[in-house]
Amino acid sequence: MKKTRVPHRTKSPRVVQELSRLAAGLAASGSRIEDAFWENRLAAKIHAQLRTGDDQNLEAALDHLYDSDPSGYSEFIYAIEAAIECSIFTHDDRRYDVLMIAVPVLTWSRFSIPSGPIAEPMLENLRTQLQTHVLAENVQFVLADCLFSPDQLPRGYHLTHELAGKLWAAAVAGERCFHMNPRQLAETGRFLSDTRYLLGAIAVPQGKPMFRWQAEGSETRGGNPAAPKFSKKEIVQAWQTHGGEALRILFQGCAFELLVPDGFFSAWRMADRLARPYSMHATVDFLQTTLNISASRLRAVVAPFYDQWLEEYRISFTLKERDDVLYGIVWALVGDEDENSDIVGQIETTLRECGIAHTTLLQNRFLLEYCEECGAPLFPNPEGEVVHAEFPEEGEVAPIHLH
Image (cartoon, rainbow, N blue to C red):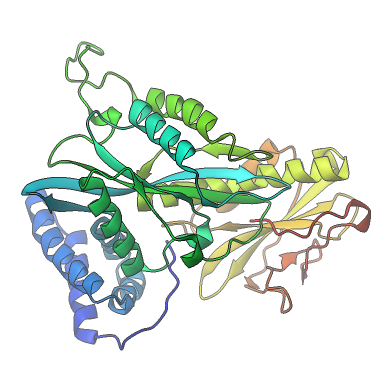
């Protein structure tokens, strides 16, 4: 995942070289025991960098590996994420496995999407639903009393690690709620479709299960007495039903989809992937409702946008018989996706699911361009020009952007 890079100190070529060497060694490993050798040394180096409160050496090593060793890059970024979100924590002479978790919520609304402080009764209800439907028995866990927008998540590796440490400490101490100061959170941008996050941490005695799908059941499944009593699919369905009901009051006036809790980075990546088709469905529903037309009256224009390499696709929506761009959405590349990934196929499949039968695919290599006045991304029209999306005056609504 991409990070905001804020330089603090001068990079150390020696440290960058050592981080790159260890990650490359892990990628080239041929056995589990060799994996452990490289993983332990790489983790120690990453933790040393996190303790400095500066991300520059980690970012520089990622840049180097991205160009020179794609497999090493993948191993390195997962090692960084593991060092940030999970650990072994000692409290009162007991050792705990600890994990920072995120619970994503995909949502859209013509009105305001909520973010910020969560009232104590709702937080307790969410705790109950998590304990009942998702978490293993007797786990200790804490939830932050805030519904985070993407703008309010910690920026940078060391800031994320710092928040994880506070959540771990609260979880092992048996606290139920971790208070966030709303004045210290960034402002939330207004979008038609967006993601919200619940954050927290789980702590269990070392080696014990954290989630229900890890726990051995007291009843057999398929003749295997050690198999989980419930499948992960069943657990997720129960969570989405009951957890969704717990959140419904908070998301009044919004459509929303509750996703499964997971480690912070895995949940973030999952939300990034699923938010793209979700945002497209939301956009088409919004245009149909607001303009009082069917999806068959709309046309989509799809174009790739580059910085040094392919960064995203931008999709414009026009009326079928006109070239004016009504709205646009950004389909950003996520994880290991690149020019060789079938992103266009995913976009076209989602457009068909939305009822859009008319699609124009532009082959130009567009540069990432934004409006100089408002900062909104510019979108391609059918003629291959990048323009500002303008909603028609007769259907004028409150000025909002779409993800």
